[in-house]
Length: 253
Ligand code: 0L1
Ligand code: MG
Image 1 (spheres, rainbow, N blue to C red):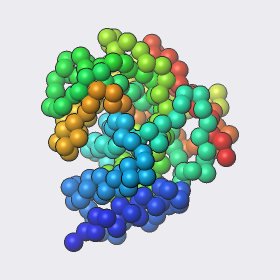
Image 2: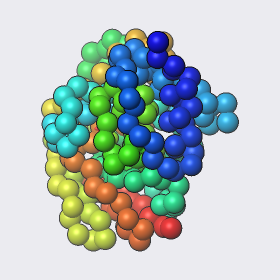
Image 3: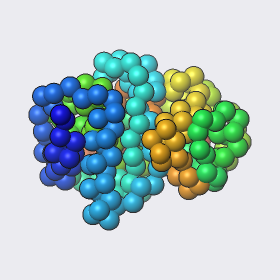
Image 4: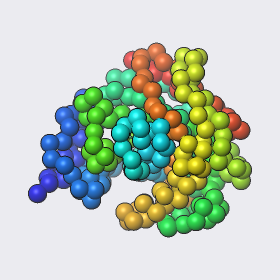
């Protein structure tokens, strides 16, 4: 019998103390993995953090290939993970952070799933360029599919740029992620399931199936469009998305 609470406590402590934990010794079922995620997030909520949305993961071939998995995942976002556009993060608060270029959505209406792409688009208040800071709590950033789900899908931080009018075609926007002024990842929003809106549709379905349907005001991160890049103290990360603008942050000690 899997001890959901004990694994949740272990992953939560690894996140709180910014210290890696060994890979789990027993394989988890998908249901157990999401139960661990929910239990570890309940610990964060009990410390005062508030759920502000969800993130989708492994929605692009580049991310699946980088991490050796082939199915999407999701995780919860809290206000404690929010980083203001242009601010600095403290490297010491993370185990081995990485950054990846994304598209973020803001909902103006509740969006219980399953939904069509048209209904998902109609529920949008805004769309923005965004950077996700991921940080696996497992040693060497190595995990199985269910282990990363248990670890809240490596959610760690997110930075959102300017909100734009969602009534535009976002299916194939050029994305350039620079670190310290040098191009590090170049891609297209099309890498995210052919159109990031499909990730929102999947988010609505998965969140509803978990009994936490998407609500007005929620932020949804669509998933990395390219592979992620490791962060180091002193880095300045900047993402430019065609037609949506810029988002950036710095890495301090
Ligand atoms: O956006 C993504 O595809 C991130 C997946 C998070 C899991 C990870 O790569 O650690
Ligand atoms: Mg991501």
